[in-house]
Length: 56
Image (cartoon, rainbow, N blue to C red; front, side, top):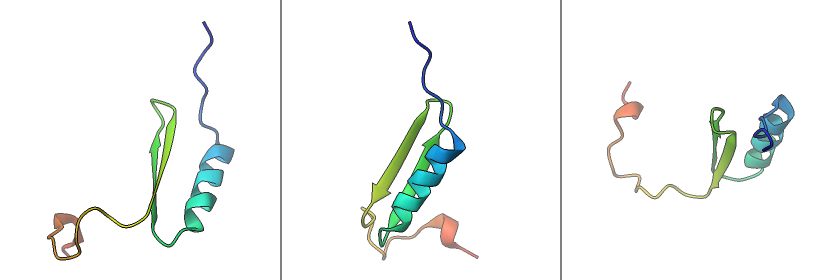
């Protein structure tokens, strides 16, 4: 059985650069699982919904 691939700094850089080309994007790095997820597009939530993290 082979070992799982590891995420390198170059992989992270490529993911961020690819996401930067989109108008709206989010990069999720799951280092323990060895996954990089790039979510491109609008949020499923509307702008009218309250987000507790936005409060200052």
